[in-house]
Length: 317
Image (cartoon, rainbow, N blue to C red; front, side, top):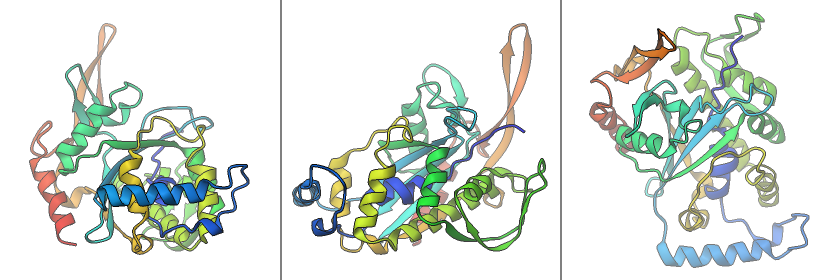
């Protein structure tokens, strides 16, 4: 079976959002086993400084999910999610970007899920800006092992599956309705696309797991949250290419209402009629082969209609 990772933006609720969309974390509750026992107090001082300096503002981060060691070792970012947090409404929008979206930069054309492999992350971020109207300079990339371990560390997550999920190779079926997922089952579900909805159905399930993980994380005590962040957000074997501007993230951590932040989901499924599938030729040696890609319905790199749709969804909340 072709190993295809569609890593949902679990890192949003587990590692990235865990860092900046949480209630204030009191220093007295910190229990890190570290000789630097003043780390939490230092965090509070730095957080207070940045809050006074720049104040609360919106934050946008792109999450790239890739398999990593143990899952084919591929660096194709087969799950790409834009997280856009608006403090005015206390909503974090999760926008799934189609992994087969065909994009370009000044050098070449390629699928957006190849951005890490080709070292073309800036081109991917620019495309996401054109597509969504949201400029995101910050990004993180996380492997599949992190998802499995993080879900297990949370004690599993609870979702409601709209339709049965089936593995055509093993014939394993996950029934529709309420499901409690451990790390292994969460990974299985977010990779599964054997449904008429294909990738779009999978993206919806990814976002279900993201929300469930985020809600579970919010139930942890402050010391448990800090322990979780230490375990997952800063381990290099789980993170790949990452760029985060802490001067923008830290002020958001100070917000008293962050712990009540809501997640809103945007998936460009077929009902929107904003995307279409196509094929592009590749020259391999002396022969030509074709790859299936996703394009805006209006044409290659014509993102105006998609951008208007996404902005309308965000403004209507």
